[in-house]
Length: 107
Image 1 (tube, one colour):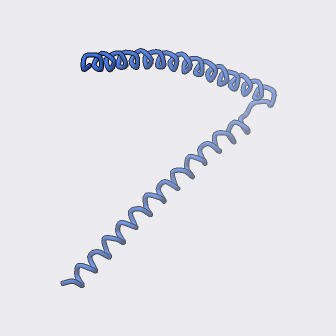
Image 2 (cartoon, helix red, strand yellow):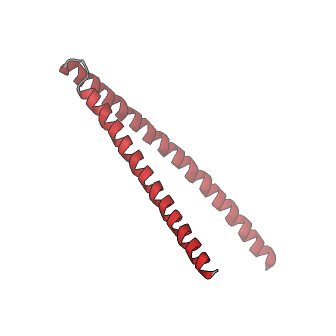
Image 3 (cartoon, rainbow, N blue to C red):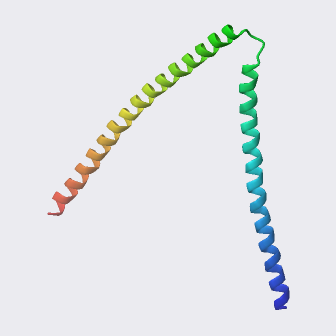
C-alpha cells in the first residue's frame, strides 16, 4: 500500500513539472512570435515600394507625431498627478483634523 502511495506521489510530481515546463515553453514561443512580428514590421517598412526620400519624409513625420503624442501624454500625466496630490493633501488634512478632534475630546 505504501509503495502505491509513493508511486502515485512520484507521478503527480512529474505531471506538475511537466505543466510548469509547458507553461515556460508556451511563453517562449509567444516571445519569439512577438519578436518576429515586430522584426517583420520593420523589414516591411524598409523594403516598402516607396522611394527613399518619400519613405524618410513619412518616417520623420510619424516620429514627429509620436514625439508630440508623448509630450501631450506627459503633460496630461503631470496634470492628473498634481490633481491627485491636491486631493490626497485634502484627505490627509481632513483625517488629521478628525484625529485631533478625537484627541481633544478624550482629554
